[in-house]
Image 1 (cartoon, protein in one colour):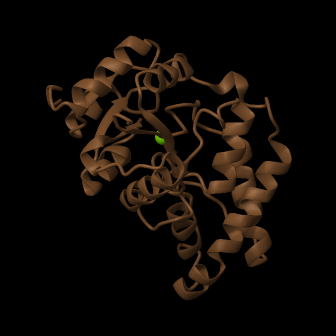
Image 2 (tube, protein in one colour):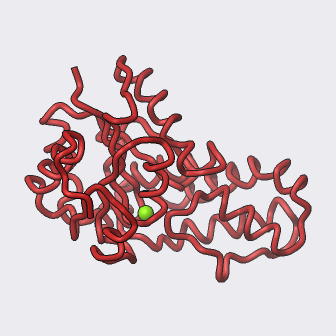
Image 3 (cartoon, protein in one colour):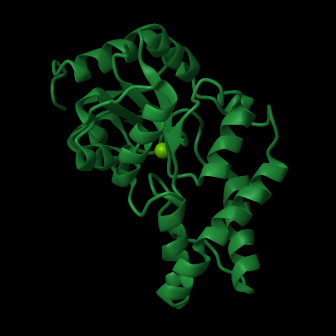
Length: 240
Ligand SMILES: [Mg+2]
């Protein structure tokens, strides 16, 4: 019997953020599908779903929403193909943040089921995990091309976890680990819990102010990570 489901964000949480090959594949895919250059300059990226980013980038250059929606799946597919062709197994091994693997292993050893919940489109996310050597540690997930909001991904991740692990995880036994206020809001919207980590662009104080159930500076200490998850899921964590 699993003690709960722990869903890790990828960029800024498991891996360092700012993957230029991801951004490159993104703009090339939009250009291919729409037949003209479309950039991501100034579009917010941290904590955003790839599908949200694409909508913002495309609608600001006056592509009609109906056309955006019709072609969005193809953009996500083309981006995934380009990223997967360029970023190969081992290419992101040195992007793994300190203690992320050890923390995940400590949680797995303690009986938690693991997955990812990420704004990355599925093919990009899975390629990143393979490139970092983490794909077997995180066998299931929910991804940024599968919903319109991050909060909706929690339900999708639970459904996938139920299929894979063979058990149902109620929202109060699900905890997100992420580095942005959007991870916190997603957990809140879904009735799940959230442990924030200051390994992205937001500080411990900022993440506490956003209402995370617990905040750690990083995942470098697996004992601290496990203790924080246990405290949050038992309802004992002091609220930021
Ligand atoms: Mg992140």
